[in-house]
Image 1 (cartoon, rainbow, N blue to C red):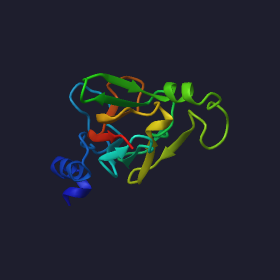
Image 2: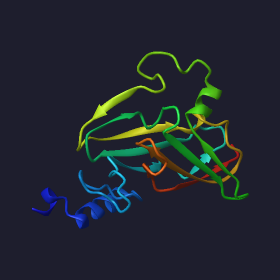
Image 3: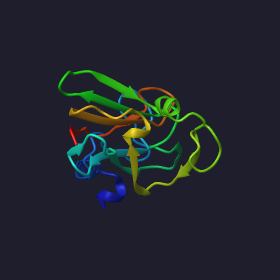
Image 4: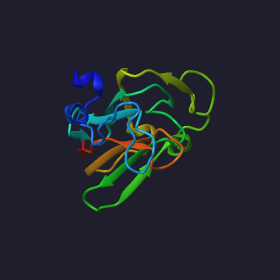
Amino acid sequence: MWEKMGHPALRLLRGIALGTLVAAPAAGDEPKGGSPSAPLSISSRIAQPQIPQNQKIVIAIEVTIVRRFTMESIELNRDRTQIQLTDLTTGVKANLSGIDYIRLHPGALGAGPMAIGREVTVEAGEHWISELKLSDYSPPLKPGRYRIQISYRYGETEAQKVVSNPVELSIVKS
């Protein structure tokens, strides 16, 4: 019965179970400040925490749609997805986006199913895992320890975004 009503405790537990930092509110809930509810939640994970230097880094992003909306893909868009990369040794942070993808892949604005900026309407209850390849956004990382956190802006303002849990990894010399 509470599940149908979208009871806040159940939504919080569902968010914790998914490993997300942002609990997915039910459609129609309005957080304080009057901004719209997040239509999705995301969480991230990495298959292996220690990666040889020249191996590709793939981040799995689990996406759960809470209410119907139109979105760009999480793994490839112009500026809705931000990848915050922190070098844990030096503390240096870099924010990567589709702009960095375009710099590394000129001509990526073309047509086709992987064209940057392609939109799709998704329905409440949809759930999938996308793979984000860090090498699509950044030159290879040097050996060291890193933290990666993904955010996705679903609306027009910076306040309208969801943030994943951080994942940490070590790049080791091959």
